[in-house]
Amino acid sequence: MEKEQVTRMQNSDLKELLEDVTLNEIHLSNEERQEMTSTFLRFVRKKKRKTQKIRIWSAVAICACVVSAVLGWYSTGQLTVFSAEKEGVLVELPDQSVAWLNRNTSLRYNRWGFRFFREVKLKGEAYFDVRKGSRFVVNADPYKVFVLGTRFSVSQKNGQFKAYCFQGKIKVENGKLSCGQVLTANQNISVVLGKVSLNIQKELEPVWIKKQCVYENIPLNDVIKKLQEVYGITVLCNGYCDSLRFTGIFPADDLDLAMQLVFGPFNLECKNVGGEWRLYRVE
Image 1 (cartoon, one colour):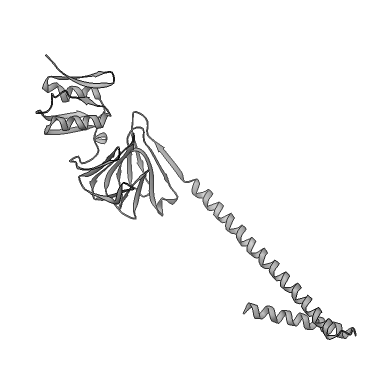
Image 2 (cartoon, helix red, strand yellow):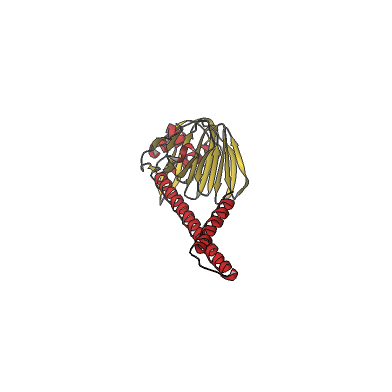
């Protein structure tokens, strides 16, 4: 339709031009008339192309301004929360989900974009209580944990990755997990030195939130594994614990007291020797 209008305008303008030539008694041959017509049409087309280019570049400039404004607005919504070396932090996310950050942990998210895609970036360890809704993603590079609504924890530190599902269902993805690993309640997965292991746990929430571990008639070697995990230490048992079982509690924030409560009932003492914790029998 627009093309037809332009053609009619061109023919009308050309007709007026030729009439002006006739009225002024300017006599042109057919070849001169054709040349005049061609020149006029070339001028019209050139002007039309120039107008189109101006419109295109104007549209591009407007789009660039809009994109810059949106990106600027979005970047102001970036928030990073850090926990201290000796104390965790409770973070309420924009959708009213909650994240408890363990010590030496950072959590990053965008408060403006969170309503459109619920994703956080985690360095360290955190426990999440997620409100039901759209997909919630925890990016603990290079691993990702996907969830709709549940309670779980994720740890990515010292080259080790761990994910615990306390309620509901989550999915862990990475190149090492071909199609991803789905965890249901009371399951956890760990990746240490490239080795993937799937385990069962009985805790209702992370030990570092309760700040204590409770056991009833559990092999002492299993309790020592948890003790090592909580405090990031290595205990050399020297064969003293193979047949022993433990019933009791040890704190998750006081190593000396934990050592006394775990090993004291068995007349064992744990000493730090050159950075290694060794067990000795108390005579």
